[in-house]
Image 1: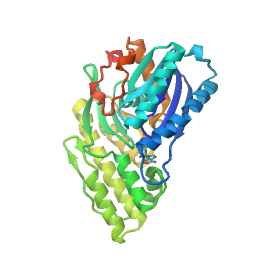
Image 2: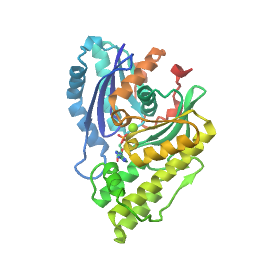
Image 3: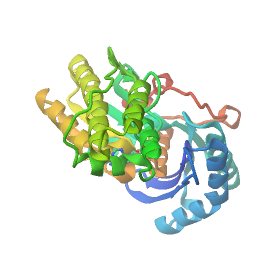
Image 4: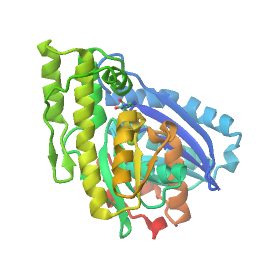
Length: 328
Ligand code: AMP
Ligand code: MG
């Protein structure tokens, strides 16, 4: 069986084609880079609708499959930015209708976990999912992915990207901050906000921005301090959730999983608790179409389809609202 997946929750347009024997046949990515400022939902959506046809054609060409060989069309139904989600959903509906194939709406956060399990072989991990739009610690329990901890305001990647923009670093901010942090030496005291297993990054962003404008620190020290504080917070909540759940594996995914320092922290925590660490490779950890295709495929095999009249997008769809019959 072969699935085509459409990912368009934010600035990445992704079209993936995946087979039921876990082969990623195509994973086309087309990123919208704003001319200035952060992601503008309507401009990103226009980019996605402009590029959709090309991306689908490139995916079919790369996979070397014909339209007839595709068995289902999957799309990210939420959570995400409304205009971006709607562009992907409309395209998926049109493709499914034209190809006379079943449509499967997929939760974007569930897809990160499922493709992470597929790519790494992890079976029952606690997952730290960290990206530009999400910061979630989750694990499977009684039919759903339960959320043990999450950000109460902005995502950790959003904090990094906003600081980077303010400091005139490269977009997106994560990689440039990581490079500069490697040469940092002095830890600037910054707000460290953990509440139970939840976290908050808006105060940290305000404080690091004020330290930047104070002119008292090198950019290397600023990046180093931001990273150390932001990732120590992630480490604390992840460790607490791992101790609480006793999960045998710890999975790190999302675009921020590319960070070597964070991956090191995750490995240390896993080691301390006898859990096996897994870091999802970046092509499948950042937002991509293959994760949607794969999750749509396993959901379909478990009997799930999305009728047209239930295919409206849900920008605030939580992963713990989704039933996960394929893991029962
Ligand atoms: P995603 O939202 O999953 O597509 O991931 C994008 C986010 O990953 C952005 O916030 C980037 O700044 C972040 N990111 C990418 N590479 C790195 C890195 N090396 N270190 C930290 N964050 C990163
Ligand atoms: Mg994501």
